[in-house]
Length: 339
Image (cartoon, rainbow, N blue to C red; front, side, top):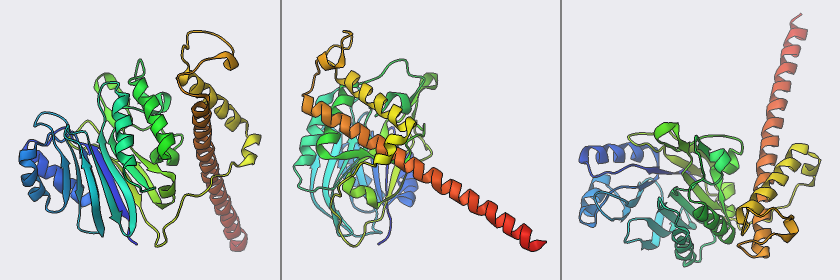
């Protein structure tokens, strides 16, 4: 089966005809499925915009000045839309879709600028209406996943309640941040603002059963926006695969760097869900704003992500060392046999 590229970008308004057609043309060349947020579309203009796009598209419209989400499809691959949920406030679209015989729930979201965890709780319920185990959610979340890794020149963390809610949703829907999984130690950003501020606000969340189908994920180059596009390349196998069981690699316990990372992960989760972080007491006496079971699950999810990322990094480093060693051996062979 051919590779399907899904791209998502905050386009900062498409009310202007010249810009809109330019954006449509550019991303139609790059992606099979294009997710656009902050489109400034109106319900009255949807037919015109769809005609300009030239094929199938879904719009969540609000006003010509703010919000708006679109999912636009090319006719280069087989797909069938079974059902859709379209937000009347211009913040999300959710479709139940089959792509190349693989059925998924695809959601495009434009998260609120303010700290609004209810929005993400609502998204979870809307997605859960569909029985698909495979989920892809993309867009501008307006929330970073990791303050240290995903921001630059920020003085304080934005939208902490929304972040906590997203982590809960990730746990309940079995979602993972695929770009971070594939780039565990990279500092790259999808938004640039005043005073040199940058952050990774745009990303894909996918269920773990789709992870094996993701050939690559990337953050692209910005075009007519202060946001960069984010994308994933998917190659579905001919045989549908269920969720596998993840098994911890015990050899990681011999890695000092990994052990320190896990200690930091546990501390981060505990601090994030403390009822009153200002009180300095022993961990076993702390009170939390979530249940102990959910706290334990959040710790396990954090450690699982670190274990996968660390193992992936080790594998890449090992492959690089092996490649370098083979190259040196080949040079020695050439030198030996050349003499």
